[in-house]
Length: 514
Image (cartoon, rainbow, N blue to C red; front, side):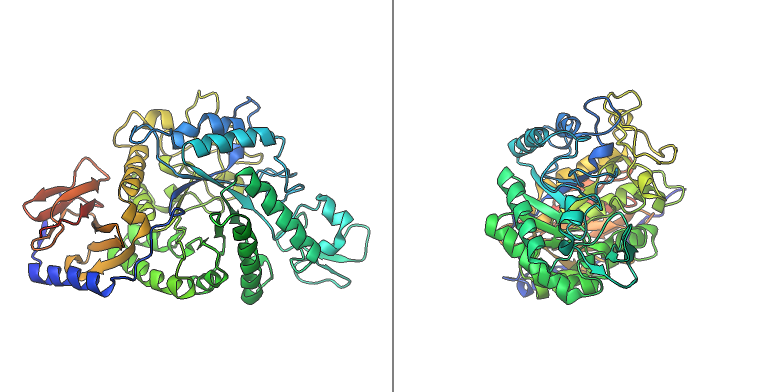
């Protein structure tokens, strides 16, 4: 189908006024650049890279494939340029997912040894890649020695209660909100808090750069106040040991609620409002919301979070290990919408997260095992994993990495470009968002991202299926600096007008015409 060509006459004076007024109004209000505003890759070690040939991913395999994420060579064009690595739980555990640890101070034998971990950590730090560990403090495994040796570390009851399981061979009950194999810890116990301090010290002294905090809304069931109080204590203990350590919490609830968790001082909380198949990104990509909704939602939430913590760092993400893969969100998609959605995620400010394999358009939905399928290196790749036990057999929708590497129009190469742009323009990560009404139409949105000392960039996004043209005449943003296209149609300039193909994105640096 031939695209109709729309030309929007935008008055230069209105554009100039909008840009200048926004710049003046927000002077002095932007946050300082932060070392912890990076780009983080979430890895399920079990399914990523098998280094010893047993079908299970391990730390040595991950270390060997680290150059895929970051090869340590600036501008090589060979890697994805990630600057942070989130390891899903690596502690000993009786389950494949390992969120039920039996020992917080060791590595699961299926993944390797502490020495293997040290080698991975050293390799990451040589590349200026930070490493954060997944820390589940709400619960342990029922097989953890604490459960029998220190029952005071857990919540017990003599009466049956909702969310409690019956203790085998006893008339007592223990809290286990997720399942009976994961008893909930009593976080008010002085003994538990002492153990947590030891855990933090052990890993921080080893060189770990921070933690992803699992299930923070479950620390105290339906008690936001106590959860925030505990997180305040936890944040204080972490920063006491390493002021530069980074914390990001999983607060899976509504935005108005998880905004309150920033009162704790914890650096980041995952931005669930934009994620999953019903989130802001997916709605914009489907066309059920205009692309301006994306930018205006960023504007709104930045003000909201700042009310609770002026030093907050947003943690945008699109999918994770608990959600269906994004490829399944768009019926009959040829990769166009999968690409565009990935860009909307990675062009958000803060510390952005990407779940492994999303850069290939991997498939997986339904039970958790399907969402944690093997990284698709290639059919004959020696490091291809077998996947979690119980995973369904299904075919991927898009090609594996070995084939996508050879296709310049692949999802993989599109993601490489998005990540390159995110790293090329630090203000995209560090700045605040300001919608430019004069550059916004029904299907197009223009907004600036600005940070003190880093200037401003203008992003213009076409969220529709037709070619669009937007005049930038009279603004300080008429020189195209970079762009993204989901097809062979490229973003182009005709004089002071930017021509945007469907789902095209243009990036402009501010010109100094003084």
